[in-house]
Image (cartoon, rainbow, N blue to C red; front, side):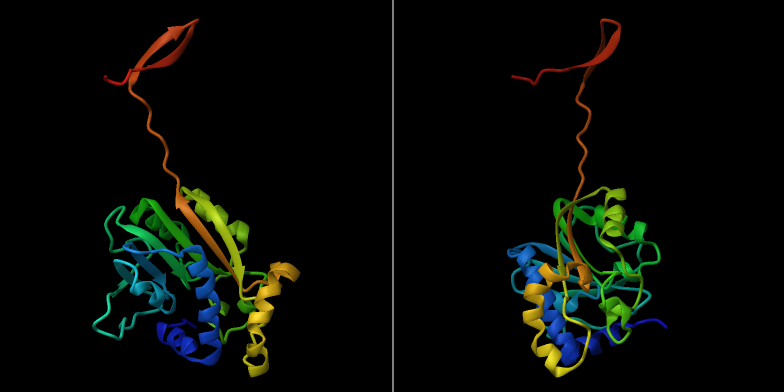
Length: 243
Protein backbone atom coordinates (compact mmCIF):
# COMPACT_ATOMS: atom_id res chain seq x y z
CA UNK A 1 0.00 0.00 0.00
CA UNK A 2 1.44 3.38 -1.02
CA UNK A 3 1.70 6.20 1.50
CA UNK A 4 0.45 9.37 -0.19
CA UNK A 5 1.21 12.99 0.60
CA UNK A 6 -2.28 13.35 2.02
CA UNK A 7 -1.49 10.62 4.56
CA UNK A 8 1.67 12.56 5.42
CA UNK A 9 -0.24 15.82 5.68
CA UNK A 10 -2.79 14.19 7.97
CA UNK A 11 -0.07 12.77 10.22
CA UNK A 12 1.56 16.18 10.70
CA UNK A 13 -1.81 17.74 11.51
CA UNK A 14 -2.22 15.43 14.54
CA UNK A 15 -0.78 15.94 18.00
CA UNK A 16 1.96 13.31 17.57
CA UNK A 17 2.92 14.66 14.15
CA UNK A 18 3.17 18.23 15.42
CA UNK A 19 5.45 17.05 18.21
CA UNK A 20 7.64 15.12 15.77
CA UNK A 21 7.89 18.23 13.59
CA UNK A 22 9.02 20.37 16.53
CA UNK A 23 11.61 17.82 17.66
CA UNK A 24 13.11 17.30 14.20
CA UNK A 25 12.95 21.01 13.34
CA UNK A 26 15.09 21.82 16.39
CA UNK A 27 17.78 19.40 15.17
CA UNK A 28 17.60 20.71 11.60
CA UNK A 29 17.89 24.35 12.67
CA UNK A 30 20.79 23.46 14.94
CA UNK A 31 22.64 22.11 11.92
CA UNK A 32 21.52 24.96 9.65
CA UNK A 33 21.13 28.06 11.86
CA UNK A 34 21.70 30.62 9.09
CA UNK A 35 20.08 30.26 5.65
CA UNK A 36 19.70 33.95 4.82
CA UNK A 37 19.62 34.52 1.06
CA UNK A 38 20.04 30.82 0.20
CA UNK A 39 18.08 28.67 -2.25
CA UNK A 40 16.71 25.61 -0.46
CA UNK A 41 15.00 22.53 -1.87
CA UNK A 42 13.01 20.13 0.29
CA UNK A 43 12.69 16.70 -1.30
CA UNK A 44 10.18 13.96 -0.43
CA UNK A 45 7.80 15.52 2.07
CA UNK A 46 9.78 18.30 3.70
CA UNK A 47 7.11 21.01 3.77
CA UNK A 48 6.54 20.83 7.56
CA UNK A 49 10.24 21.62 8.01
CA UNK A 50 10.59 24.21 5.25
CA UNK A 51 8.26 26.66 6.99
CA UNK A 52 10.97 27.95 9.31
CA UNK A 53 13.22 28.66 6.31
CA UNK A 54 10.72 30.59 4.19
CA UNK A 55 11.24 34.03 5.69
CA UNK A 56 15.05 33.84 5.73
CA UNK A 57 15.87 32.03 2.50
CA UNK A 58 15.86 33.54 -0.97
CA UNK A 59 13.63 30.71 -2.21
CA UNK A 60 12.21 27.55 -0.65
CA UNK A 61 11.20 24.83 -3.10
CA UNK A 62 9.23 21.70 -2.23
CA UNK A 63 9.73 18.73 -4.54
CA UNK A 64 7.41 15.79 -3.96
CA UNK A 65 7.80 12.33 -5.43
CA UNK A 66 5.81 10.92 -8.30
CA UNK A 67 5.02 7.77 -6.30
CA UNK A 68 3.45 9.64 -3.36
CA UNK A 69 1.75 12.50 -5.21
CA UNK A 70 1.68 16.24 -4.60
CA UNK A 71 -0.50 18.87 -2.95
CA UNK A 72 -0.48 22.66 -3.10
CA UNK A 73 2.09 24.48 -0.97
CA UNK A 74 2.34 26.99 0.59
CA UNK A 75 -1.28 27.72 1.38
CA UNK A 76 -0.54 31.40 1.94
CA UNK A 77 -0.28 32.89 -1.55
CA UNK A 78 1.73 35.85 -0.31
CA UNK A 79 4.66 33.75 0.94
CA UNK A 80 7.64 32.65 -1.09
CA UNK A 81 7.66 29.05 -2.15
CA UNK A 82 7.16 26.60 -4.95
CA UNK A 83 6.00 23.01 -5.13
CA UNK A 84 6.36 20.53 -7.97
CA UNK A 85 6.25 16.83 -8.77
CA UNK A 86 9.43 15.09 -9.89
CA UNK A 87 10.92 11.72 -10.72
CA UNK A 88 14.02 10.47 -8.94
CA UNK A 89 16.37 10.67 -11.90
CA UNK A 90 15.33 14.12 -13.23
CA UNK A 91 15.07 16.93 -10.72
CA UNK A 92 13.69 20.14 -12.32
CA UNK A 93 16.68 22.31 -11.41
CA UNK A 94 19.74 23.52 -13.25
CA UNK A 95 23.16 22.10 -12.44
CA UNK A 96 24.72 23.70 -9.32
CA UNK A 97 21.73 25.91 -8.63
CA UNK A 98 20.88 25.06 -4.98
CA UNK A 99 22.59 25.98 -1.72
CA UNK A 100 20.81 23.51 0.54
CA UNK A 101 18.88 20.26 0.00
CA UNK A 102 16.73 18.85 2.80
CA UNK A 103 15.49 15.29 2.31
CA UNK A 104 12.65 14.06 4.53
CA UNK A 105 10.49 11.01 3.68
CA UNK A 106 12.48 10.74 0.47
CA UNK A 107 15.32 8.22 0.48
CA UNK A 108 13.31 5.42 2.09
CA UNK A 109 10.72 5.65 -0.71
CA UNK A 110 13.23 5.84 -3.57
CA UNK A 111 13.18 2.97 -6.05
CA UNK A 112 16.54 4.12 -7.44
CA UNK A 113 18.44 5.66 -4.50
CA UNK A 114 21.71 5.85 -6.43
CA UNK A 115 20.12 7.86 -9.24
CA UNK A 116 18.41 10.14 -6.71
CA UNK A 117 21.60 10.94 -4.79
CA UNK A 118 23.42 11.48 -8.08
CA UNK A 119 20.81 14.11 -8.96
CA UNK A 120 21.33 15.77 -5.58
CA UNK A 121 25.04 16.03 -6.42
CA UNK A 122 24.25 17.56 -9.82
CA UNK A 123 21.92 20.34 -8.63
CA UNK A 124 23.84 21.21 -5.46
CA UNK A 125 26.39 24.01 -5.58
CA UNK A 126 30.03 23.17 -4.91
CA UNK A 127 29.83 24.74 -1.43
CA UNK A 128 26.28 23.52 -0.76
CA UNK A 129 25.04 21.10 1.86
CA UNK A 130 22.77 18.05 1.75
CA UNK A 131 20.84 17.03 4.89
CA UNK A 132 19.08 13.67 4.91
CA UNK A 133 16.54 12.60 7.53
CA UNK A 134 16.15 8.83 7.20
CA UNK A 135 14.35 6.23 9.37
CA UNK A 136 16.70 4.08 11.43
CA UNK A 137 16.24 0.40 10.64
CA UNK A 138 16.99 -0.49 14.30
CA UNK A 139 14.65 2.13 15.73
CA UNK A 140 11.11 1.66 16.99
CA UNK A 141 9.59 4.23 14.63
CA UNK A 142 10.35 2.11 11.57
CA UNK A 143 8.28 -0.75 13.04
CA UNK A 144 4.90 0.97 13.33
CA UNK A 145 2.84 1.80 10.24
CA UNK A 146 0.66 4.54 11.69
CA UNK A 147 3.60 6.93 11.22
CA UNK A 148 5.29 7.77 7.89
CA UNK A 149 8.58 6.46 9.30
CA UNK A 150 7.12 2.96 9.25
CA UNK A 151 6.73 2.99 5.45
CA UNK A 152 9.41 2.48 2.84
CA UNK A 153 12.88 1.03 3.44
CA UNK A 154 14.65 2.08 6.66
CA UNK A 155 18.44 2.36 6.63
CA UNK A 156 21.34 1.84 8.96
CA UNK A 157 23.93 4.58 9.31
CA UNK A 158 26.52 2.61 7.34
CA UNK A 159 24.08 2.04 4.46
CA UNK A 160 23.40 5.76 4.13
CA UNK A 161 27.10 6.60 4.25
CA UNK A 162 27.83 4.04 1.56
CA UNK A 163 25.20 5.55 -0.75
CA UNK A 164 26.64 9.02 -0.16
CA UNK A 165 30.28 8.05 -0.67
CA UNK A 166 29.52 6.09 -3.82
CA UNK A 167 27.94 9.24 -5.27
CA UNK A 168 30.79 11.63 -4.37
CA UNK A 169 29.49 13.05 -1.10
CA UNK A 170 31.56 13.51 2.07
CA UNK A 171 29.92 13.23 5.47
CA UNK A 172 30.15 16.41 7.52
CA UNK A 173 27.98 15.90 10.60
CA UNK A 174 25.54 13.34 11.95
CA UNK A 175 22.77 13.39 14.54
CA UNK A 176 20.10 11.04 15.85
CA UNK A 177 16.59 11.97 16.91
CA UNK A 178 13.17 10.63 17.96
CA UNK A 179 14.17 8.63 21.01
CA UNK A 180 10.66 8.67 22.46
CA UNK A 181 8.61 5.51 21.78
CA UNK A 182 6.07 5.81 18.94
CA UNK A 183 2.99 5.91 21.15
CA UNK A 184 0.00 8.18 20.73
CA UNK A 185 -0.68 8.36 24.46
CA UNK A 186 -0.90 11.90 25.79
CA UNK A 187 1.23 10.96 28.81
CA UNK A 188 4.02 9.64 26.59
CA UNK A 189 3.91 12.73 24.38
CA UNK A 190 4.24 14.97 27.44
CA UNK A 191 7.54 13.32 28.32
CA UNK A 192 8.92 13.53 24.77
CA UNK A 193 11.36 16.39 25.42
CA UNK A 194 12.73 14.70 28.53
CA UNK A 195 13.26 11.40 26.69
CA UNK A 196 14.81 13.24 23.74
CA UNK A 197 17.35 14.98 25.97
CA UNK A 198 18.80 11.85 27.61
CA UNK A 199 17.90 9.20 25.01
CA UNK A 200 20.98 9.90 22.87
CA UNK A 201 23.19 8.96 25.83
CA UNK A 202 21.27 5.95 27.20
CA UNK A 203 20.02 4.13 24.08
CA UNK A 204 21.46 5.86 20.98
CA UNK A 205 20.97 2.80 18.77
CA UNK A 206 17.17 3.01 19.15
CA UNK A 207 16.80 6.49 17.66
CA UNK A 208 13.91 6.85 15.26
CA UNK A 209 15.83 8.68 12.53
CA UNK A 210 19.32 9.51 11.32
CA UNK A 211 20.20 13.09 10.39
CA UNK A 212 23.27 13.18 8.15
CA UNK A 213 24.74 16.32 6.62
CA UNK A 214 27.01 15.89 3.58
CA UNK A 215 28.97 18.04 1.15
CA UNK A 216 30.09 17.47 -2.42
CA UNK A 217 33.46 15.93 -3.16
CA UNK A 218 35.19 18.20 -5.65
CA UNK A 219 38.25 16.64 -7.18
CA UNK A 220 41.20 18.89 -8.11
CA UNK A 221 42.09 19.12 -11.78
CA UNK A 222 45.41 18.07 -13.22
CA UNK A 223 47.74 21.09 -13.50
CA UNK A 224 49.03 22.19 -16.88
CA UNK A 225 52.58 21.25 -17.75
CA UNK A 226 54.67 18.78 -19.65
CA UNK A 227 56.02 15.34 -18.89
CA UNK A 228 59.77 14.89 -18.51
CA UNK A 229 61.91 11.86 -17.78
CA UNK A 230 63.88 12.03 -14.52
CA UNK A 231 66.06 9.01 -13.76
CA UNK A 232 63.99 6.87 -16.08
CA UNK A 233 60.60 7.96 -14.66
CA UNK A 234 58.12 10.31 -16.29
CA UNK A 235 57.00 13.15 -14.01
CA UNK A 236 54.82 16.22 -14.61
CA UNK A 237 56.62 19.55 -14.73
CA UNK A 238 54.03 22.21 -13.80
CA UNK A 239 54.10 25.46 -15.76
CA UNK A 240 54.88 28.49 -13.58
CA UNK A 241 52.21 31.07 -12.95
CA UNK A 242 52.48 34.26 -15.05
CA UNK A 243 53.92 37.26 -13.27
